[in-house]
Image (cartoon, rainbow, N blue to C red; front, side):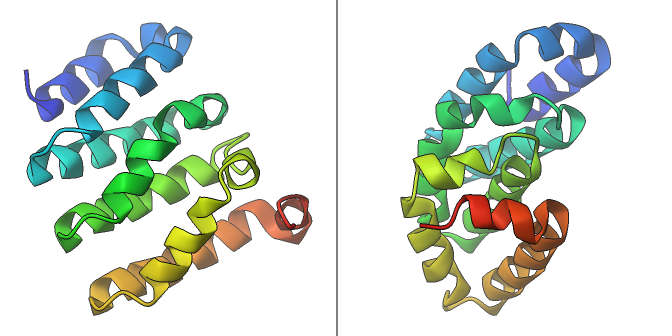
Length: 148
């Protein structure tokens, strides 16, 4: 079953089950993100973004499960993988408890800095857009909590 079919099935029939099993869902998507196929990486990032928005109140608790694969895909050579993965990361960070990832995985900051200087203008633009959304979402007080 491909990622899109899995996503559709989960969304249509298993929303309440998903909510009670977010840890398992996050692990499954994390495993798919590790696939070598760029299209699979792209689809899995879009899928996880959707779940971050759908289950914003709980999914941040499981960010540690997936953050390493998100970071690997943010460093991918294809912009078509980096772009949805940027959205995926920020959707996770904007979820409740998501900002704790910045405290627990400080390398995320270095990756974000690198992406803000990406050779691809589309990547730089989405970074600016997502950083602005993130700042508005969490506010100044929450950002101070992750300062060093």
